[in-house]
Structure formats: structure tokens, C-alpha cells
Image (cartoon, helix red, strand yellow):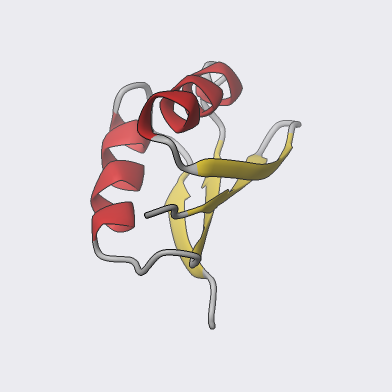
Length: 74
């Protein structure tokens, strides 16, 4: 299974979450989405989104450019 990737650098809330939601809808259960973002609110937003939707936040690397790995559940 190949990871899916989206680039959300330069986008402010809520655009990254909207793009992630759209991408997840086209994925199969168990697939991984890798997201790069630079919005300072991204870590809190992605944690809250994962909890609300039931998808798994596998990892998040914080820094100037953050990288999150999300697994689609169900």
C-alpha cells in the first residue's frame, strides 16, 4: 500500500482540515495520509480532527514545516 500525500504548506485553518477530509474520503481503511503544513494551529487542529472523526493520528513531527501521518479507520 502506497502512502497518500498532500501539501498544505501556505494554507491557514480551516483549509488543511478540509483538504485532509476530502483526501480521506477517497482512501481505503488502513491507508496512510501524509500531510505537510506550516500553519501554527495545525498540530492542535489535526489532533482534534482525528479525535472527532475516529481516524488515527499515527505521528506528528513539529517544526517550521510539520508532517502528520494519519491512518484511515473504517
